[in-house]
Amino acid sequence: MRAREFLDKEKEKYGKMYSDLSFAIDNVSPFLDTRELKTRRYYTKLPVLKRYIEKLEEAETKLNKAGIFSIFSNGKVIDELEKYKFEFNKEFKQLQKCSSCKCLNCSVGCKFDGCLGCREGSNVVSCDHDRINVRFHDDFYLDLTNEKTGKREKYKVLATLMDAKLNRQYIIIEGLLSKEKYVLYYYPDIDEDRFGEIKDEEEFDFIVETYQSVEF
Image (cartoon, rainbow, N blue to C red; front, side, top):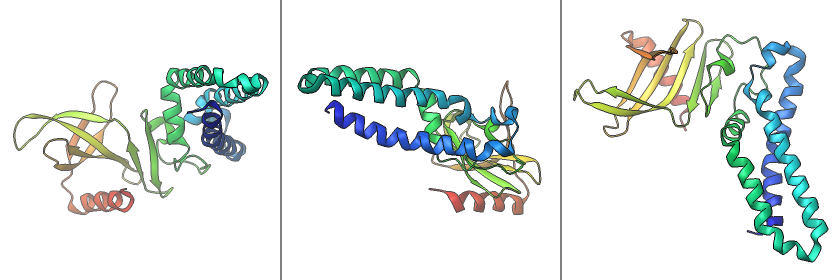
């Protein structure tokens, strides 16, 4: 890919992301104190994206100055920019998630964990600002014992949910081999996460229906 084409695509993609995130900060800042604002992941990680935008502009300036000789700079320009994105890969992935998170422009007094409840590569996909929210995750897997087979199996976490009314968290997982899905109570902990069976049928159905309403 030619450097100019690469720059145009990157500026369009990340320029929009930077504008959206910056607008969100301006939008919520009047309603949040500084300490709470700093808990927002996009607030602390935005300087990484800002520096990348600057690098894109610097690269474009260099190409313009090189004129007809810019063809010799194509590979170098792209390599330097890709190296920066690789170095801050986690930040770029999280900012991408933040840009589509339901918490992005929210300044309502939060009853949930907000950004503090986010793992890397996760975001809130649904929130009613009152009782329930749903969080999706990338690359969140668990090694658990399948109760039917008695064997260890790897499970993909499809979603975690929080019920502010009941002050409970839930997790929905799917076995990579069995394809069986489970809906469980979720007790995240620094040392080791714990899980529990949901015996209340109405509560179970509510969680399943909430998840299915936002399942992609």
